[in-house]
Length: 79
Image 1 (cartoon, rainbow, N blue to C red):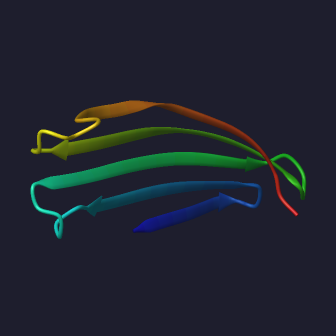
Image 2 (spheres, rainbow, N blue to C red; image 1 turned 90 degrees about the vertical axis):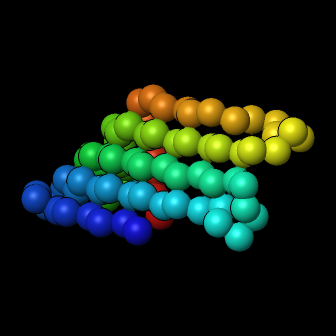
Image 3 (cartoon, one colour; image 1 turned 30 degrees about the vertical axis):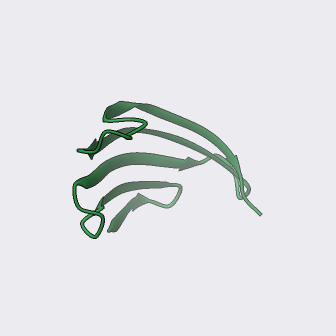
């Protein structure tokens, strides 16, 4: 699910969340991302945000089982 709020013409604030893995039972994952996007020009965007991602796998062959979290920085060109 994604929600975007645009308080100014060149600024938007977004929140994204998803949950998954229920069909492959004992595995579950979820993530939450919050971002602020500033359009410097028509084709250049700066994004700052934070992401929390959790992966839980109750199987012996799991490659990764834990949490990843941290800041997001993006410089983007859009056409």
